[in-house]
Length: 213
Image (tube, rainbow, N blue to C red):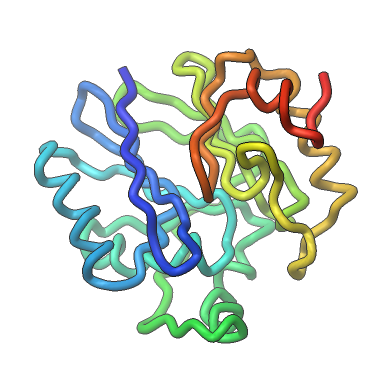
């Protein structure tokens, strides 16, 4: 059974998730930790639950979702996994952060693996399908488990809203196309977004103006 912990990170209130199961292996999603307080919260949760981190996956490469990549690499030896279309965005994260007046220290670790639509990532007894959902960025992806009815949606789908499309690589046309994928998922699917509260596909279909089945 999947257990998920959310830790809110950095000044943009980005959601970092730690997903684990009965094997005690875990997958870290979008570590945006920026500073010792957030880093310690992640370390404590992993240590107190005797978890072994196996993957660090990114839903996209924007700076607020990758600030903790160096911390994760230095602490657990995990290189980030990201869609190939956001590889350059990831590499330029420090520059984009500086454009927003935010400083990121140290060098970004090298990408460990580049993903494409239809790929899978796995840890413990869990397997997540990679679904390419461009629009917020060219390489935005969702990590979806049909068995667990869980989707890590990054900044593509939020509760009652969707991600912004005005940053470089963004496209309103593409994100609207990507949102059609969500209408095919079961209503009970948990939506774990990159910012804000958890929701479900059924709730979003009933309330989100951007979704219509």
